[in-house]
Structure formats: structure tokens, C-alpha cells
Amino acid sequence: MLVMGVCNPAGEKDEYNGLYFTDKELRQLEGNLNNIPVKAEHKGDELGKIVSSFVDDEGRLQCLMRLNDSVEGAIAQGLVKNGIASELSLGYSVDVEHSNNGNKLHTKSKKVMEVSLVRKGAREKCYVLAYEGDNGLVQFPRTEQTSQITDDVHAWSMFNLQ
View 1 (cartoon, helix red, strand yellow):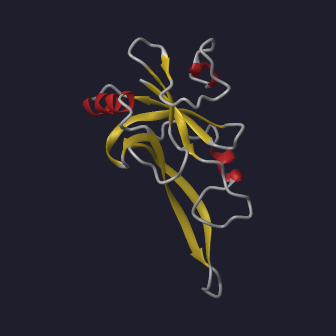
View 2 (cartoon, rainbow, N blue to C red):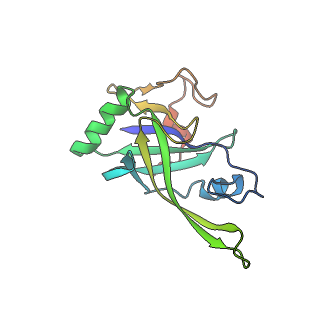
């Protein structure tokens, strides 16, 4: 099953020094998340992998995930179809260092570890936009659809799937 969604909201301004991604950092991730694991609630076995990613016109990081056919993957597919796991959460680590005088913290780098299907994500507006239904047709679980996707265009065509 293919699942597409927003895994991170628009980035912070590039001057920002904190735990969230900046716009520049998100754009560096674009197209570089392939093979990152998909999990459920940031736990357990891998349920699939990210197969493509991009930053949309609103600056949000979107990804296309392929859920596997393992027992756990099949359960996750059901949770997506039933709207139980309808949000996404990006799991990443942040390298932090102290300034020379020790009064301030500075973020050095951030590394994406996984994306999780979750009931309720930590960030607003990170959710499943579309998934491949049983009949192979694209299902849109939310009324908010991106302008890039219409019934006339196969949703997955916007991704470079190889």
C-alpha cells in the first residue's frame, strides 16, 4: 500500500536555532529520505519505507511511503484505511552543543531516523493526505486535498518512483 502525507510542517526561518527544522534544512531533505523506515507510534518493527519526498508549495515536507505486507504492515494499512492512524510524526535526532561560555545551546545537525503513522502527532497539520485503496484507486481521507492532485491525475505520478 502506498501512503502519502505531510510529515513536517513548513520550516522555521533560516536564522532559527532550535529543535525544529528550518526551511533550508527541509529543502536539503527533499528527495533524500528514500529507504527511511516507517513505523507506528515511533515503536516496533519497520512497517515500510519512504520511497520519495518533496517540499510542497507551502514549504511542508511531504513523503510517499510504501507499507509492506508483513502482519504488522497489514495492521498498519488497516489503521490508515479506518482513519485511526491518520497523522504522521517525523522522528529525528538533534546534535546540540554548548556555546563557548556555556550559556547557550546551538543545534549542529539533525538526522531523520524514521517517520511514524500515529493517532495524534506532536506537530499540527502533519497527516495522511492520500492512500491506495483496496481497489487501487487513490483515497483522500481528509476533505483538504492538495491542488496538485485531482481525480484525473494518478496521485503517485507526482513522485519519481523507480
